Length: 202
Image (cartoon, rainbow, N blue to C red; front, side, top):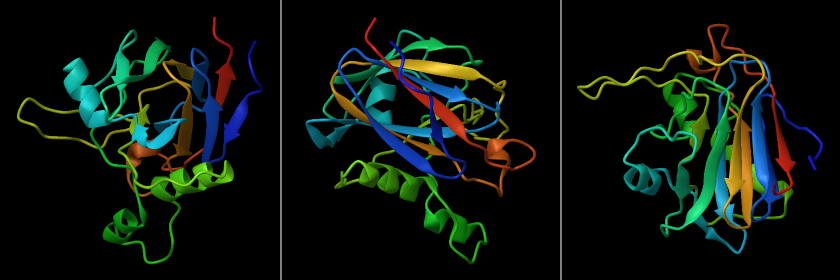
């Protein structure tokens, strides 16, 4: 059974509970929207999906279908079970925050993924003690053999999606990245909404 499709508003964040064995489907509705994603143990928010631990565990910079991401305590948390996109996601860059936009020359407040995470968790009555790095779905950060990185446009199509299976009871949070200065969300630099569903265990 599939839950309702829930909107992640453009430039904003959402969070949801996902039970052991349930699936969470994240949909790139318009095709060029990066979605920052985090996952926390429902029993202890101090345990969370860790990009640095997962990269070491997988010996990859980019998870693929069948790969299980792990926590900062080296336990399984989410497994990528389906990906209709080209599979281009990012585990390297930090989520944008207020200081990031200041450094880009923005003088007034700018929506950012860091605040979106806190607000999404707050909507569930949850408060984090620390902010882990995000798994940046659909984000295209090509790298070269000499270690250079590029901030490139997404290569996804409208409706592309990824599906994760929860390996424990988790809280998953999302941010429809509000980056509109760099081409992270496409050449038009116009953030849009994305969507997600929580599905029953198969």
